[in-house]
Length: 274
Image (cartoon, rainbow, N blue to C red):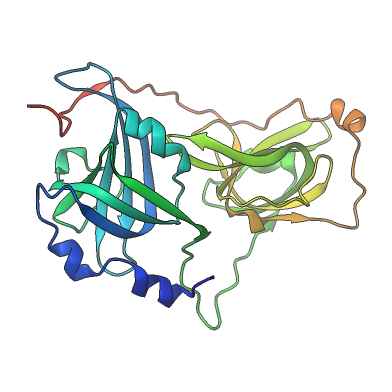
């Protein structure tokens, strides 16, 4: 049965329990939501020069943010199931001292961090933990632009773009986590659409005309990023194009100059190093 936001917070692990995690305890339970997915990388350890490491940050919806690490086979096993705002219960994790050397884009508040073990169990709820809303929220204004012009806009500019679905939306694995992805086209122009909080919408079929509200990003190639699948709206008054009609559409992607970067393996110690 669905819970309200406050009911979920009550169900989450309390501040007091997180603050009293004991270093070395390998039976720790954490209940909360995925605040941020840091992603997967390879790090150099004493037993393997390319050890897989997946990191995420969990929150209890109150004051505690805790880093959670997955190493090797555990990273491969669990990372495809993780997405931001997922509600999760973790059982039999191991508590360790929080290592600031591995700190990423989120600053944890907990003095410990959790490591997922071979016998750890992660249970994900079907619901997502959504941001709090106000009684009279400030409406978000999106500027309507043509698909071919989106690369000319600032990357924090909220824009609305129309197009036909050429690649239907589905869940994909990215950086060890998961999200939604699809492609829309308008005449010769095309753009990939990334959906951070993805749930399947059977109405978003091949050839459907949609309006997408989001922001243009170039750090993963030219893409349109939106927070929720609700930002991809069907335009029911428009006809659905056939696969043959779509065949000659969408072969140019709007682009701006970007800088490529490559990551080299870094030297880090895993919790299994001596």
